[in-house]
Amino acid sequence: MQYRTLGKTGLLVSEIAMGCEGFTDKSQQEVTQMVDALQAGGINCIDLYTSNPQVRSCLGQALLGRREKFVLQGHLCTIWQDEQYKRTRNMEEVKEGFQDLLCRLGTDYLDIGMIHYVDALDDWEKVVQGPVFAYARSLKEAGVIRHIGLSSHNPTVARKAVESGLIEVLLFSINPCYDLMPATENVEDLFAPENYQTPRLNMDPEREALYEACQALGVGITVMKAFGGGDLLNQTLSPAGKALSLNQGLHYALTRPAVACVMAGAHSFDEIQSCLAYETASEEEKDYASALAEFPNFSWKGHCMYCGHCAPCPQGIDVATVTKFWNLAKAQKVMPETVREHYAALAHPASDCLQCGACESRCPFGVPVIQNLQAAQKLFGR
Image (cartoon, rainbow, N blue to C red):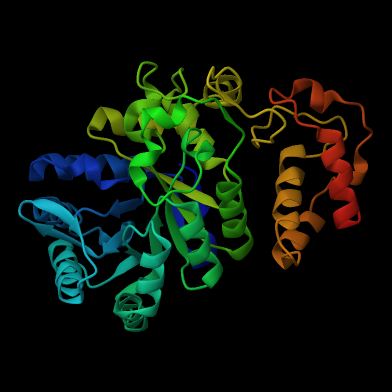
């Protein structure tokens, strides 16, 4: 298992993580067996947005004696009402729901406390200026949550939160189809078939700006809906008109800037093993570029997807990394120090380019690589 640092939190998380959906409608024995499989496979991060008391209690029992082996990402503002999950901003319900979460998990702290489901700008303003964020901050000061995060499907709202400097972790929906969709306050828009009837061209700039802001500011991203609820794995259901493989979906999300892990919603031992197989998959099996380039309804022409097809460079330039640093730097009014220092540490900067064109000939998206390298050299001075 590969582990990544979750932004500026310093937490090391497995790049394959676990969403809580897979624990639903499972017996205590089944949940324990699933947690056994997670631990055996090196998966150490679990997201728990659900307020389902059975899921919380079963997971708590399964974690007995091994709580410290897992990074738990729990949510504030999610409660169980009338036998179903509900989002709330009522502080009495928020506090009661969070205390229930701790109690059922059998722990006195969470590694990450997520402010749950903020998709509208006015909701973010109410959260950050009102009692919800004050409560989250008090929990952090008391050591009950170690880091404050936010879950969102809206890149405009998420970026506002990231740039506020108030959150350290973002749970965000990332996959190739969603990355083409403009910001919306209605999460259902991401799934609506009618929104994919007109061909989509290139990544939505709000989403690209969000990922770059997270990378520059040290906000780690944990990914939800990497497979669009499973639709992207099914050619009939996929808005792209073609299915991705499990490995391609995981690899796409894991190659976005600032991403630390993907919350895979595995529902069984076999599905956990399928996700773990990503760690030993070949580069060909992970390669999403060939699939994206053939999507009949979409086009990423001229847009670098950090897929690595441009390699190897005869001069040893890591073209994808140079391009990523260039994108990060030009997206900011002032060049982030971390970006400048990371670029300076590269063994082969953009100035080493001989303009042979080998990279451009291999790029499936027609990216003007040489032009981008020249721009990077000008920006970074080498």
